[in-house]
Length: 164
Image (cartoon, rainbow, N blue to C red):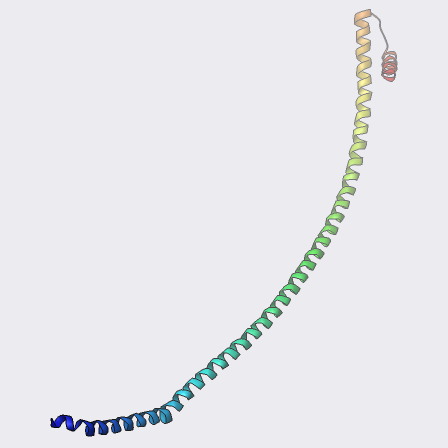
């Protein structure tokens, strides 16, 4: 068959063109496209490295800012605590001064009240003696029929109160 006789000639020709096309593709991709791909990959790697470096720098700055903020916060807390303690001490001194003044005023009022009570007690005792003397004289007159003068009845009541 004549078709099979041509097979060897056609196969060598097709094999030649296949190698030629594959060689062109290989060199075309290797020389034209590969440098562009490598450039893109290198640019991407560089961008990633730059982004990582920027992120690391930003993290370091954030850490420094946070440390400064914490130091300022601690200083503010210390100052607030000191002011609070000073305010408490001032308030305690003021309260103590007020208490002393109130104690003095209460002491004066108490002394005056005690003196007034003493006078009232003495007056009440004096009147009690008078009432007791009148009652004793009246009882002696009613029960025993003895007429006692107010002076004698007062003397008898004072004697009884002194003994009791």
